[in-house]
Length: 265
Image (cartoon, rainbow, N blue to C red):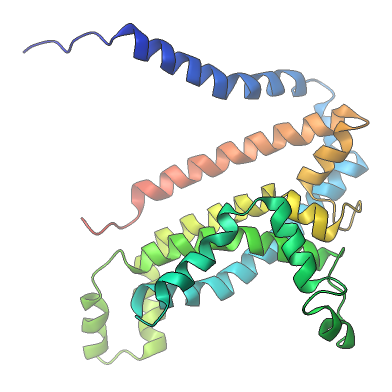
């Protein structure tokens, strides 16, 4: 049995440089943040408020995304209609828009003087610079990640499986709930995790559309930005927490990817 040739030193060196470039900043952050004072810092009012606001708003944003995004993903996966390609591309647009542009767009659509500003005002709804604006900004920037993953899930298995259940007498809702959703569930879960992670890290659109009011609209990224200008300790503590959450999200996605159903299976 022949031995594999030794790797060329140039690719090895370039790989080492890339790994260092990606991991050194994270290592430096954790080295600075993981101190005996970390526990006390995480219990401060500013940190607790940011965590509470982020938990509530990302939870609400995920619920909205699941409720509205799942039917859209199913429609894109199972139906053909005029303009489907354009519709699909428009749904992906928030994924590539700069966050600041997303914030301006939300203000021009839902803020005072925006396209829907007057009707919302008549209805007694004031969205801009409220927790509702945070949720809307998070949905706008994160929902496409869920829709893309969910669509892949609905395309990942043979529709004949649904056809067999329909022949056996399953109604439309029972078919979707008992057959389609379980088969697509790993993809839906992956999309939900991605959307939640994107909501948690949302910054630019939230800052422009919702502001940064402690206890109301100041999420974890906004709290890090605010603290970095004055007291670095909360910024370091929250940054370390975000690194831990990001690593947890990556591990979760790896586990889901290893178990999800693929067309080849």
